[in-house]
Image (tube, rainbow, N blue to C red; front, side, top):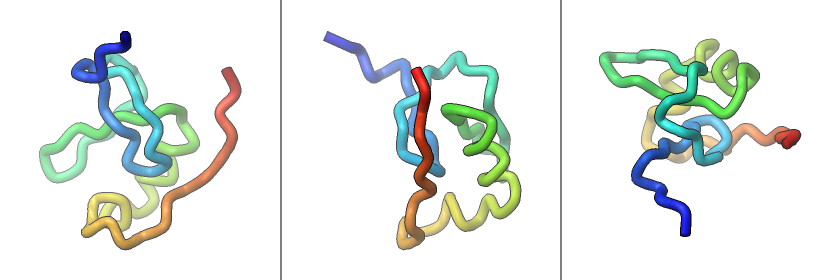
Length: 65
């Protein structure tokens, strides 16, 4: 069984991300973690969109394993 307590959720695509990921950005004192650089760049372009009230559609892309 996987322990999700050591994970965050990428605010852009919704993918689970390990807390120790190096792909992270801080916005208004909160650290957000990302599955890849594309999601981090999307967030960085308009962070308020991704931390708002949740009415915005998510960003979709393929994740290669």
